[in-house]
Image (cartoon, rainbow, N blue to C red; front, side):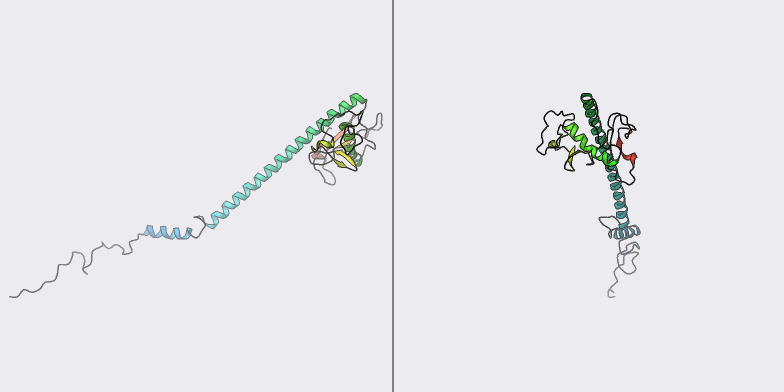
Length: 219
């Protein structure tokens, strides 16, 4: 009997003759991998791996920190200026006391009692304490005059004096004329708050009415 061709034996579990993959999805991707790729796709729309919301939050934090830093620096600078003003007033007070010891009186500020006179007192301070009584632009100590505050004259160019009304005036570290009032001897009633003299800086106060709590004074 002739041999009858027989069909090839099929691998078990593969009715179609293909390789058995154990009923796994042909895509080769499980659920976790799919979710991870979707998430990565969403985050890929941001900048450098950050979402827009995350960037906005970071920018907000930087702005807040910068504002705090600027405010802190401004406060520190204001405190330093007030300290410098106090040092200047203390130096001027020392010079005024030395002047009184040698001359018997403090430098008199004519018309003492009002703000205009107090501002003009900055010129009085310059003339009597720097030794430059005639306020010569050439920059020399006048003959027979004593220097009661070193470095106050304009030729030192250290910021303690500035041109003022054709002469020179003592100014504070903020560039404002130092206020000075001194009554003539035996004046009654006194126009000053102190029995000796009034010396102060408005410390940058330009308000109307003035805020005296901001001033640096000797009373």
